[in-house]
Length: 63
Image (cartoon, rainbow, N blue to C red):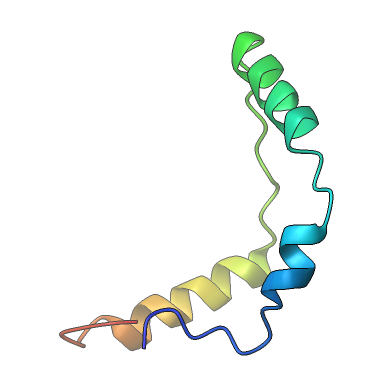
């Protein structure tokens, strides 16, 4: 089942003010100023990712 979201409350989510206009304006400004932020990746996160890659390397299909 692709869209199984047992904790999703549609009514609650649709009634929330998510300030979409403000978010779009921030995105527009980021594009105009060519903002280019990069998160610092901790070595522990790199190791977790490498472990994942190692585990799925020989599988024909991953989720």
